[in-house]
Image (spheres, rainbow, N blue to C red):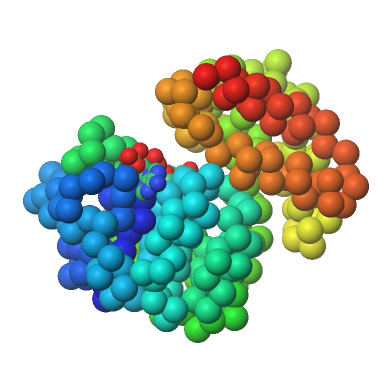
Length: 293
Ligand SMILES: NC(=O)c1ccc[n+]([C@@H]2O[C@H](COP(=O)([O-])OP(=O)(O)OC[C@H]3O[C@@H](n4cnc5c(N)ncnc54)[C@H](OP(=O)(O)O)[C@@H]3O)[C@@H](O)[C@H]2O)c1
């Protein structure tokens, strides 16, 4: 198949590399001006990809978008005239809230949402390291997307495990809840995930989880406070040595995904008239840090 990977950072380079090794035709769409980009994954042979080539985008069967959430709408709007209306668009990023805008800009395309727990690290623009194997969930965000379950087999062949989720929004909310608990706190305090197991964060985590649960339920999805809290504690333990992506964004003075993580919860909470003071305070604190730069 013909794929265009939009935003070949850590996750995008990982998928581009695995998909190419699986025999697909891959082009990239990036901020780099070169018309060819070389990517070497771990100890594999380096691959060369065409970059920013409109005709490759026009021929793409799948547009795999691995940009960070805040930039998705802007970049897809810029590329819109090149995207064939049959092309399947897959949004693969942390956070929620981009699909609504993409449905408006590209109403005829099948739209899929994906969430992955693979870990990738890009030490330089031509290297990508697969730091942890994980699972990718894929699901439909519109009617046409529901015809695209076959893509699971294609992606799974390149980089397992991939599974179809009939209610992808539920999966995204589950992931969002974990991100809401871990990301802003680790970013504000510039700490590893494991530090959140300390007693001083206990009450704050409980408040965050309780508010997020109320919002998830109001949105019509399932979430149970004790169960969610237990999952979050397990993630904190399992990733205790890791720095969250938001911690890293703040450490490197890059715009974080806060608007699409905690910000999305706050936005939905307002629509349902639910008070979310713990999440609102974290949102404000991260925004305040970002505004200092
Ligand atoms: N990395 C992981 O292990 C991991 C795991 C699970 C989920 N995620 C999620 O996956 C998403 C991507 O994360 P990532 O770690 O791959 O981030 P990343 O390395 O920063 O990749 C984002 C890419 O988008 C590019 N980009 C920015 N503006 C662009 C533009 N205007 N046009 C084209 N490309 C543009 C960036 O270019 P530059 O290289 O020029 O900055 C970068 O290559 C995030 O939502 C993240 O939370 C990541």
